[in-house]
Length: 180
Image (cartoon, rainbow, N blue to C red):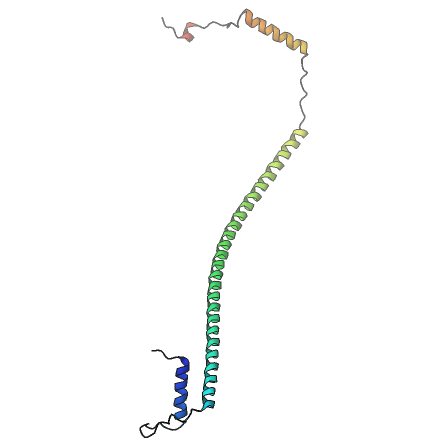
């Protein structure tokens, strides 16, 4: 059977009052019990009860303090796990950013190479254009008049309709490949 805290305290106080400091306890066989007619000291009982009440209130305060400390520990643990997660996310973000930075540098290098190539090709194009401008240009041939062009076209079509072009040369038997 469990004893209450107040019962334990009463027993302890009773032991202390029966055994003053520095004295060794003596067997109670020689002592007589107090008679039931004498009343216990009310002042000491009230003092003990007030002491019990203060101890109980201190116990409650300590229990509340323990609860608050446990809650704080849980909060700190939750914060620690959150900080670890954020740290891992930051590390992942950092590696992603480093990869992107490397890709950006590679692309910027390619862009610089392309710019140099474009500048080189542009300068070559400008050089050729200047050469063309500096070289004497041939005089353009005079264009035949429209009437002459139409007449030559018409005569060409008529000639084709009348007779196709016959070959003027005859092929010898040697070329054809006949043998006698």
